[in-house]
Image (cartoon, rainbow, N blue to C red):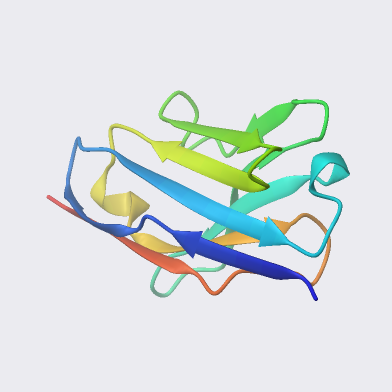
Length: 113
């Protein structure tokens, strides 16, 4: 049974930081491509960042230089470090095994101005 459990969301002021975590079980984590998506109110879901098993990362233009995705294969956890947060980063953030139907439940991030 595949499970993805996110944590780390919350309310933060603009300019602040948060780190999201996603604990994964039931898959071969070390060879999977992991991703973070977000869905803001009234908008479509957006790919924020992804990391391949070899360490290659890619980011949405809107978060480049501010967010960093990383993994800990020992803990089977993927992280999203979010710095210099902006009100437009407010969204529900979801962890995903890229190109699969496996999703976490989502964690709310709210950035106040």
